[in-house]
Length: 336
Image (cartoon, rainbow, N blue to C red; front, side, top):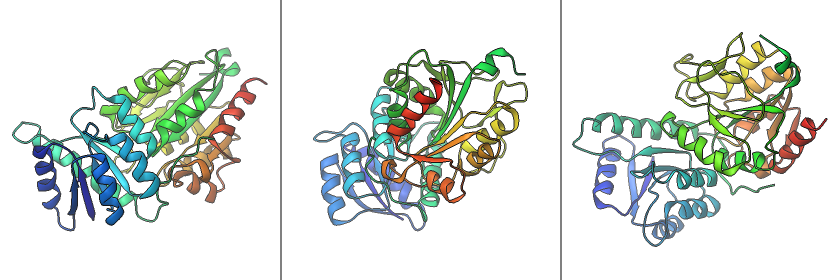
């Protein structure tokens, strides 16, 4: 696997290079000290994966990610020490197509080994997921009671490019929405709180992490918030489950959608957005078979046409729509 490092800190470069070169078949093909230099190096040699820092002189990681995804498509993993103070930049980069985010390992601490293992796990997962999927492209923004009987439910699954796609769809919805919205976005549990905070600033609806025992609530957006899978219980409360343990996507869209198909007796709307891999396709099909209205994002507006493509090939989507038309559909549905 050809890997590039984009980071202005020499100590971090040395740490990352040492970790990468300790793994057979992983090769560091070039190093750049800022985003502009990375773009120049991509012109000559596009890697399989870029480990991209966020805060750098000349050009930061967000702008570099946007340009590279647009002109030299490859996998990008945000590796940074500054995630807590720069959540907006993290999700801006993910909106442009960065696949995930992880802390830069720090050598000489009690957490060194676990941080290194987490980085290598992310890289291995990306290597697996990038096999035989479309390359990233620039996004084109285009127990039941009376409450449940009257409330609509919109369930959304997303991955690569999902943050920006979600903000695009949900920003156009009214704050007094007569629907509950639940989102399963592929993101490490350590960053889920930051993701919810970021999305809360982008849209008129309140956004928060789902916690065990939650009931769905109209006018509120709940976001899966751990590395375990979000699940709807028979009593219509939310919980988290570790099973299936070996599932590569955590939290899994399939697990949540399948639980809705089992336990949410009222029909709702299931939506599968941009993302790498096939997670959510089988779950969306399960919802369709239960009478739900199911939507897959169209290829033209996807950063990665992987998950929606799998849903279309499975005939799981009743409609295939652009981001703009998904938002229009939700508004029309709830104004009936």
